[in-house]
Image (cartoon, rainbow, N blue to C red; front, side, top):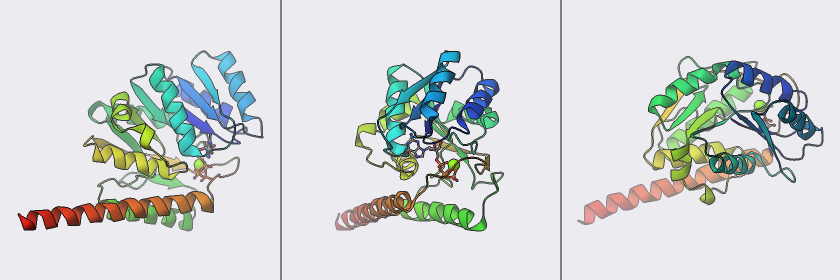
Amino acid sequence: MVVPTYNEAANLAWIVARLREAVPEVDVLVVDDSSPDGTGAIADDLAAADSRVRVLHRQGKEGLGAAYLAGFQVALDAGYDVIGEMDADGSHQPEQLPLLLEALRDADLVIGARWVPGGTVVNWSRFREALSRGGNLYVRLLLGMGVHDATAGYRLFRRTTLEKIDLAEVQSTGYVFQTDLTYRTVQAGLRVREVPIEFVERVRGDSKMSGQVAGESLRRITVWGLRERRDQLHGRLRRRSR
Ligand SMILES: Nc1nc2c(ncn2[C@@H]2O[C@H](COP(=O)(O)OP(=O)(O)OP(=O)(O)O)[C@@H](O)[C@H]2O)c(=O)[nH]1
Ligand SMILES: [Mg+2]
């Protein structure tokens, strides 16, 4: 499991302990962007105490997507067959990881989803829920994917999936990275499965969601959507002229 961190000093030890307890055979890679609050040093202590925990220190805050790309590369180089994503703030419960692992038996990407039957969120405001549901509806309509929680960040990829979707091409740096990888996986003809999870809003620490991150999402998804419509139209015109 790749766990990106930026200022998660209050959460990291707690979440890694829960993960190691819930699924002991899982190895953990913390990807820290030189958090000013000392999260990197906490990660080093965890790694020193447990050989299944490793840390990737990065120079500065470059965004969630950039952290994941760096983490995936380390995991691919190390030869892992299954590579996962999980937030460090407790929103993704390690105790639910077995559900995702089970679903990966007949999938290439498994998403722990909020907006499918059985999925729930704990402690979210109506506004936050509307934003996430609305964002996912926009993604579904524009990109024409059957995925209900394409923006979610609790996931498992098969190694082969990451190898097929050309990570070198990915430019998304913020949270839109999640949608980007979902879209690439669908376009590659691979199987995506969503399993309902209980998503718990963070109790400690601050959110890193920002206007800039949201803006990148809206921009990129709109561009992909317009491209999708254009290709559809071209396909139709070609068929008609035959
Ligand atoms: N390495 C790294 N990690 C990041 C960066 N931005 C966010 N993260 C981590 O990504 C995960 C998700 O970020 P959050 O701040 O929880 O975002 P969120 O879930 O949308 O916001 P909340 O609802 O407040 O939790 C957390 O583990 C963060 O520490 C970044 O630029 N670099
Ligand atoms: Mg969070």
